[in-house]
Amino acid sequence: MAITVVGSVAYDSIETPAGRRERCLGGAATHFSLAASFFTDVRVIAVVGEDFGPRQEAVFNKRNIDIRGIERAPGKSFFWEGSYLENLNEAKTHQTDLNVFASFEPKIPDAYRDSQFLFLANIDPVLQRRVREAMPDVKLVAGDTMNYWIKDHRAALLEVLKGLDILLINDTEARMLAGNNNIVLAARAVMAMGPRLLVVKHGEYGASLFHRAGADGEASKTFKAPALPLEEVVDPTGAGDSFAGGFFGYLASQETLTPGAFRRAMFYGSVMGSFAVERFGTERIAQLTRKEIDARFTQFRELTHLD
Amino acid sequence: MAITVVGSVAYDSIETPAGRRERCLGGAATHFSLAASFFTDVRVIAVVGEDFGPRQEAVFNKRNIDIRGIERAPGKSFFWEGSYLENLNEAKTHQTDLNVFASFEPKIPDAYRDSQFLFLANIDPVLQRRVREAMPDVKLVAGDTMNYWIKDHRAALLEVLKGLDILLINDTEARMLAGNNNIVLAARAVMAMGPRLLVVKHGEYGASLFHRAGADGEASKTFKAPALPLEEVVDPTGAGDSFAGGFFGYLASQETLTPGAFRRAMFYGSVMGSFAVERFGTERIAQLTRKEIDARFTQFRELTHLD
Image 1 (cartoon, rainbow over the protein chains, first blue to last red):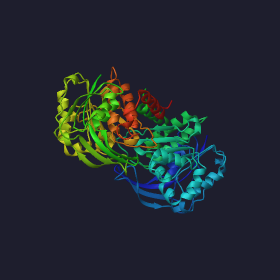
Image 2 (cartoon, chains in turn yellow, blue; image 1 turned 180 degrees about the horizontal axis):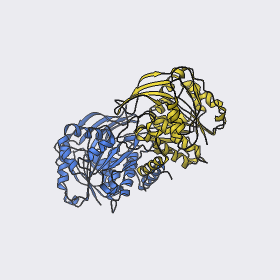
Image 3 (spheres, chains in turn yellow, cyan; image 1 turned 135 degrees about the vertical axis):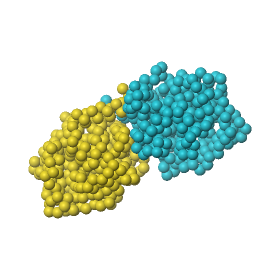
Image 4 (cartoon, chains in turn brown, orange; image 1 turned 90 degrees about the vertical axis):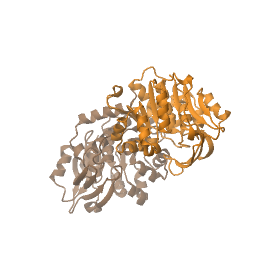
């Protein structure tokens, strides 16, 4: 089943201990859709500027991603500059230019209307909510957010959470959103805000899937997916969005959403996150094959299973 | 097969967000031997003062732990006072009184000589090495250490590492010992110092078992055990030693040390660590049953396995 994703398509200038790249193709919707495209049809809603050209389009087209919902506006695309020189787990932002994103009004192409899965990538919760309300009949809605919206746009974010089935955030964001340092209690508090499932990403320690008691026949059971022990992390940018793409893309490829499907989705999320960080920007995932994905899935199983 | 463990038997005064306890029975050898006693025979080498009495002895006796190697010396037992008020993952030490431990000369009772497993808990590496050399014929030797020995007693510690099959330390210690922040590269560097297996404990994120390439028929494969998501951590003191006791105790209970045995040992380590933190000091593990251990092992499997 097709996924519609709304979020940023952007240019990133990134510095890490492995080097520096100027103006790579990036943005949450980009990383998400590339990762999800290995599992299902993906349709993107975003806005870009006049600097978005055929080379960037080709990255999406090569993966058969529908970009009819990427609006072209006069001006420049969203731009972010950041570094991970001291800490690979947390970016230091040097510059954020919203550019055409400042006046973004998401429009949903008619061709996207039959999407059964909706992903609200990390953007202004006001926009997330608008897209959610414009697509009331989707089967499953997941979303992401970040510390900025949690701290300074809480009321709008709480409205979005009410309309989500699944929220994907990291440890720090979960603790901040719940105001509780214990991750189990924080997860429970966050799920009381709306989402019946919560994925908490732990960076190099993998991710946890929490179920609201009674949801999905799993009571309040938790599932943990590992991260791959990596000798080198070239660029962490987009790892979380790639995780979300693998996770949600796999779910959208399933006939029925059994508890087992959610567990495998967590593994596919970790698999896609592990590829994302191997090169700068979208370089690794844009070149990936399904065979490589399946081989790494097997590796994740061996990493965690007793027999 | 029996384990001999050398390490501290001590009194701890502990403050955590859950409360405060004065002079609980503690020490690495205590926590280790209680956890290991659920799997195999355990024999302790330590020194205590005149404040160690029948109530403390009873804790060991109840678990059939051989304490003939616990020497009584004039003076007071080792005493530690610490708190975890801001961070449950790291103790803040308020006081350390070595007392009788300052002049500890480990003596190995004849009855311990046929032990096939040896655990060198976290003490002065000079003493660890002496015990290791006095028991040259053991089948498997594991050990622990801490930041203090890594920083200020490196030469003595490196001598100990040469005689270890397995080292168990936490992330910070592994990074410090190797001088490398990447945990995969750090693990490889540490294993080049002697141990062919390395267990790195990640606190609330579980633990990883690294194999030196070629060791145990697993090439350089890694295995990850989760930690249990806990709503409350009452007292983290002894969690690492309890992990080591579960891990090494389970290995000692096995006829042959297959790769599968090491994987299950990692789970039993996590299981014992998860019980340890549920109450202050030894309170939880001293009251534990094998049935509770097996139920939690099943819970760990469900937490991580796809089917």
